Image (cartoon, rainbow, N blue to C red; front, side, top):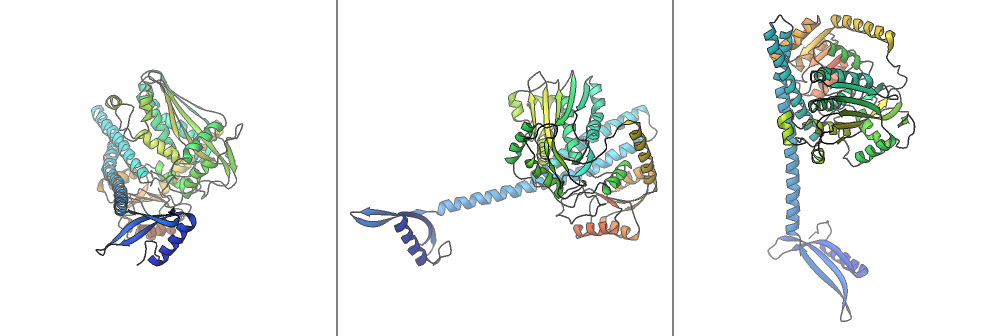
Length: 529
């Protein structure tokens, strides 16, 4: 009979016998044929001893049946738990999408009604509907983000954006909320912080907005100060040490990031049209490269350059053109709020956790925001932390790893404002001359999207699914295609390639209801969120 390692019993016996005699000791597994015909797996220990002057091999047999059975049960339980976790994440993603679709319809119709003649009372009711819908969508988005993070399927963008503008716009969104509470809201971007960078602007803003919103929520007097600066060498080294202990990030790499000269402009045009924009971001191998390359940041840099020069830029490019400096940027949100104790700080970044139960009862919230922020910061090559004392406020800070776009002129001055106004006028004329294809199977969403396009003076065609959208694109040229998903197409990956091949000047804005397998590289002007 054969042994567990595939060798004949006679050959293995002779080899182990000789090994024990030579080394004095050996241990191995042995398949023992029991008298009832069954096979019992044993662990055999052979020890060379001398008894009464005679060399002797002492054999100890240990039955491995229970151990192997227990190990198999543990492995089966582990696999079952992993499958259950995947099923839960998929369920959350599906449910989030199913809830989001009708909620978008409610909010969209409320927006349309707000644009009509209303009494003051009617407008007040609609504002409540819109505000409540927005709050629910934020909760749904948090649940969806959490499910993507847990299933290691979160997509990151790697596109050029204006870092200074992103910070300013984030504060502008919350300025009214802060003023309503009588709080000041100020920002300082220190000298040396790059303006044009490559990274995920959407996720960066998400983290910043979450921290500022929390500070406003938990602050009754005083205010909130935001500071942005380059990370110090010691801080870079600390972040590197933290990232080195984390599992390698598993990013969704379907498609390629859009090039800044093409899809970025087209996507901006579609977003300005109000017809809907892609959320969640374009996935790119460049994002994974940016995260992993954060470990190679120079921790010994001195002076203003807290990073290392990389002539090749971000692998896979995305929105980057040419090489640039990789830097770690530190964002700080300081408030004069209620603060928290050490016990509250220890559980703050765990999902569904808050500083204490009374916080949830008084201020609301799901306890998901900061857990998501931590995961996003890790994926962007950084980390998040806080300093806080009860009654003395809190200081939240986070780091992200970005690639500086070289030779970018800094915005500012009257000439810049005039140029921006001219660009906006050109963009508006372009919007009114373009033709958009809307592929949507939900009747309410059809009405909302087409009515918004109509109100903006944008010509459009409407089809009910991806198969009909492909036929429409083959029949005529569209500058933008808005799709909820590649619906009712047997092979969506191949279909996307067919879409992309139709025109190099078409922006495809998709909102996927379920993850696709990795897509082939998209042409420069195709944006796939």
